[in-house]
Image: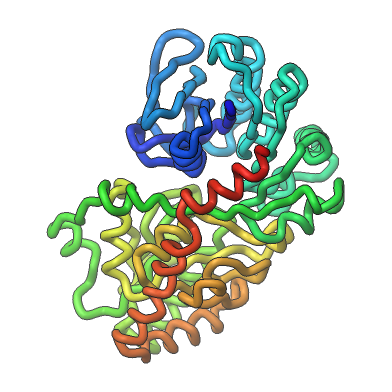
Length: 404
């Protein structure tokens, strides 16, 4: 069986980290399926992607055929150039797809983002009578409407909504990384098509590709004898991190032993720095290599994630961050009012209402008063849940059932 997996933003460890799509392809190969992963070589989140001459570049990694589509670079997540790379990606797949392989695909998977990959996947489905699986990792264009304020009458919104509907109607199966996707899909088609296959853990990456933080780095950013609350990831508008800063402002007077670390960069960083100016209990840490993130997280007492109170989150969330957090075996607090998953299932932390500063303060103080043994027990629940339920070896079996 030949599977073509189209995902503009997939990647491999060679160029930063193994993405979900590559990890699935590795597992497919081990189970006798021949995968081809089709990727774009431009991303605002990764400047290490390969550059080459020509329209595409073919390589084999862990037995997986990888097709890199040559695209122009861009830096800003909201730039017009980013959207243009989406268009070029699909155009080139359709125009030169015959060069990718001499074996026709039996299954084609289109993984958002980009939502436009529905177009090339439908082309492949119709040309080769292939089964079409639509994988939804971000619900677009709902995200544009809720998080960026785009009107439903905006031509871009209308275009993407029509493509989304077409994808739902024509897909043989719809895979959602978030647990409540069926509630969104029922606006267009019967929810029976939807299967939840959440984010998975690549145990090989965590066992073989980790680095410890330098002592100088630890001394610079980790205050001694403090209870450390860490957020690690993009400092973006959807994560309501201003509420975390507000909690830090109040906790500085209530409990000076509690210290916040915000690891990462993003468009909100300057605003957050300004809001936190003068605070002694919050430190902003620049992005670090993916291979050092686990070392960073494991030196924290509590890990934090937060989200705005927006409609798109009603269907659940599926951040890769949860996998890193849970594997680090630290308790997790999530400010989130939508469809809960993973953290509650694993009993490794808790959800509290979005943007509720008082709830965050009260929950942090509750964990502050627990013993080290109690904190370790809660944190270990997350790691054990990952290993027992969310390895790509186990999750790929669910995918393969869809192929048949």
